Length: 114
Image 1: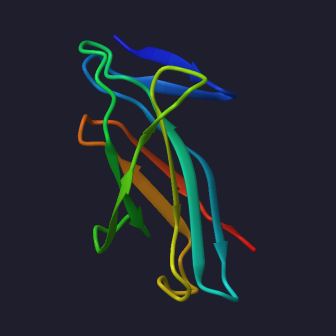
Image 2: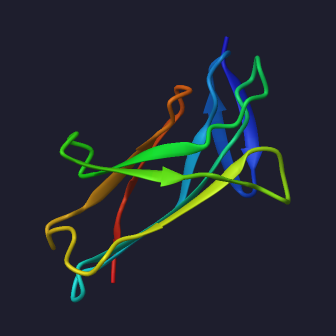
């Protein structure tokens, strides 16, 4: 059985017992080597628990991992996260980003190169 939740304008598909993660923005400023990623999480379906961190993976290869805190979302159940890297933290060849939750949710998005 497949479940779905709508978060802002994003449709997030979830499985029972798993939270959902959605990347809502992923920008890479190549001239400065800066990455900015924003997103949302939903509560885990069974427990209602909202994760306190997500793991950001640049290039989705398991090499550049960053723990990003999740703060409660005042407008909806779940949480929001924002990450902005220091200058030149990631290579100019970066093209995509993945985010995973310890509760099982995951999302992947191509980077908008600016």
